[in-house]
Image 1 (cartoon, rainbow, N blue to C red):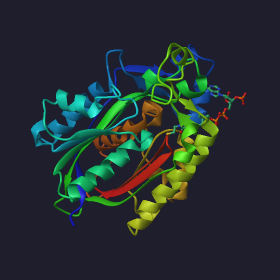
Image 2: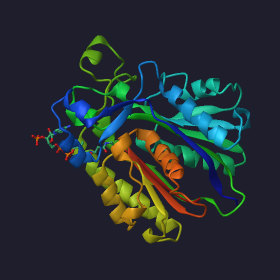
Image 3: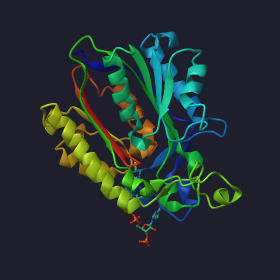
Length: 326
Ligand SMILES: CC(C)(COP(=O)(O)OP(=O)(O)OC[C@H]1O[C@@H](n2cnc3c(N)ncnc32)[C@H](O)[C@@H]1OP(=O)(O)O)[C@@H](O)C(=O)NCCC(=O)NCCS
């Protein structure tokens, strides 16, 4: 069976940049604490009138243009996000509208920071099953809109942005070689937006208590992230019959530089083959990996035939990794 490959990428980061020094004026924190504990220096913040679908549209148009494709050439759109424009319709429907399409199947998936990997695996299986030929997979989040800007333990960690990949059947050896994905809902309460859903619909009180923003037990999340990301990276490398040294570029989810470092070491991937952009973009949940991939391509870090590994972990908990030949 033929492999499935990424034929084009695009990304978009909102114009406004919020630095650690800006945050020093907002909460009791310091550039030194944020940099040493997380690796983050700055993050991009969406404008008030910029929704998640607006960021995706900008990234999608770039990816289509690069591949010399028109929106009509797409058979489906998958959007991975936990910050949708609305609960319904799906953000994918707004993206479809923005691209001027009106009949292909489109849908959202909610797998938090692992969303782009879940989306790619779903696109791969839809293409391999023959149901679709070409799929646009987007990872996008506007976490700044669901952040408690008075909580220093979370507000320094996140940013906004969108990244997309256009995926189709491969005509050579390039494409996805191995993949793994999983979830453990027993740990859901450790990283949660408590209000705004059917469990706790929005009320004056939930808004006042900021229960529609991210709530996280950072220390516990950190330990699970290290474990699940380490195991997932090593698993896809082993499934492909390879070793860590065979990886040309490791593009992990960027939540904390210390998590990345531990996962990299566990999978035996050399540091110079690990792509780090957390300093510039912070944690953008599902958007982190596709944005990092697009940046790495622009910088000439990805060459034909290279072995790439994507690796992520997120709320749920969810995790997943993909090994592919470029
Ligand atoms: C959030 C995180 C950076 C905190 O780092 P940490 O080393 O675990 O720090 P702790 O939470 O133990 O806090 C240590 C101290 O720093 C303080 N602190 C927390 N945030 C701070 C900030 N922004 N600035 C300054 N001090 C801060 C705490 O209050 C605590 O002070 P205390 O010792 O006086 O109580 C880290 O736990 C993490 O990255 N967790 C995983 C997050 C994640 O990946 N989330 C998304 C999953 S995709």
